[in-house]
Length: 108
Image (cartoon, rainbow, N blue to C red; front, side):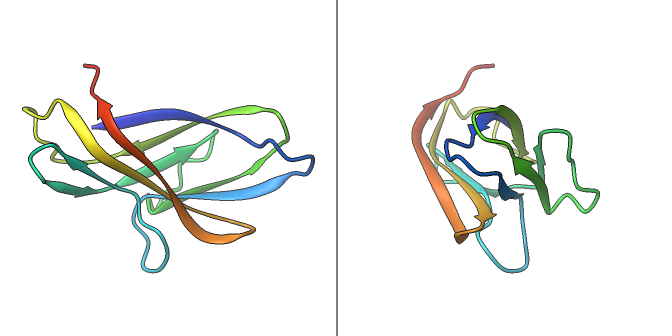
């Protein structure tokens, strides 16, 4: 399962962003399907940075520039039609945190 999305820095200053897949400390990205299965992300990419370790990707977000991002999850149940929770973990100059998306219909 690969989730593609975009990020926009709406501040007036450049900002560092680390997009987390799985990290030993901090906010991991994870999702849950409608069957209650949990999946931890295995790879993250933001802009042109796909970190070799696959644990996180990092970039400087320039103000008002749309930046493409991706998080990959392995061994996803092919019968699932919805993500009941997609939690995107990241680090910014404000520390470790996450953003949640709920009840996302899958498009195949």
